[in-house]
Amino acid sequence: MSTEVFRVTRDLPPFQGVAANSTARVELPIGRRYHSVDLAIGTLANVGEIRVIANGQTIQRYTAAQLNALNQFDGMTAAGATTSLLRIMFDRYDLLSAAFEMGTALNTAIADSAGVAITSLSVECDVGGTTTTISGTSETSFVDPSIGERRHWVRFRSTLVFAGIVTGENQLNDFPRQSQREIEIDQIALIPSANDISSFKVEKNNEIVSERSKALNERIQNDGGRRSPQSGYIVLDRTERGSGGNGIDLTDASDFRVRVTASGAMTATCIYDTLGYLQG
Image 1 (tube, rainbow, N blue to C red):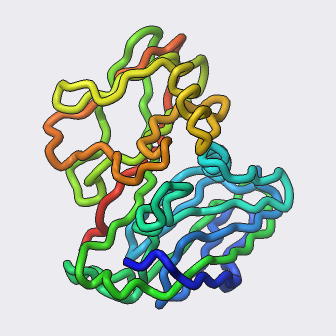
Image 2: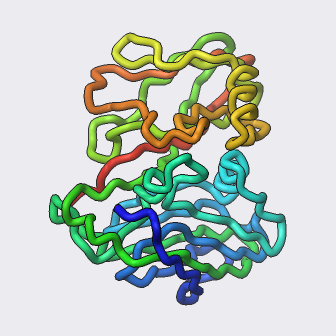
């Protein structure tokens, strides 16, 4: 895959269905490689959940507020409360290798080595009780012709919810890992509804993969200069030092869990980033 690409920034077609208590939707033109989409939102608080859908499969799902916080964690500029610019990344952000960054860009129209081609791609935004304006701009390049010689690597962002967390150590083990979507873990962001998470321990096949206090985790991420920890979020980020090849391999995981130490009762929302393949 060439790392020298000619990128084009172009307005998307108009969103359809932009009204209070409805779902605004835009179909992205097929035939290009999508690196990112920037949403221009009149009032950020009026947009709830955002979804990216490829071939009828939801590949990214989060709220506008969550995406704004995670973008800032990655080092991007915050979206303002009004006239907000909110970026949806298909590339991975600020890695040492351009090949790793662009390895998850969405190539459309051309089939990969398994015969899977992205033939439809859309973005949906749930609008709340007060309407707002929504428009979009894409950054694309020519489709990578080598995609036919390999599987199409896609970054999936799923939303999980862990309820019933109590004071002390808790075990979170309901992480999906049985499909082609979950070949490896790129990032796990935990968002407590109340109180705080003071430490985490990640275990795969009964071996510790990562064990950190929240303070140490944020220190490491701040010192690396690529990430900016956000209040109310604790993030296990396998790309925090710019490496694109440090994901947690799930293909041989007979067991995977995250142990968290909580300061009080909470429900934890989790944005679960995995790398894998679209289903055929």
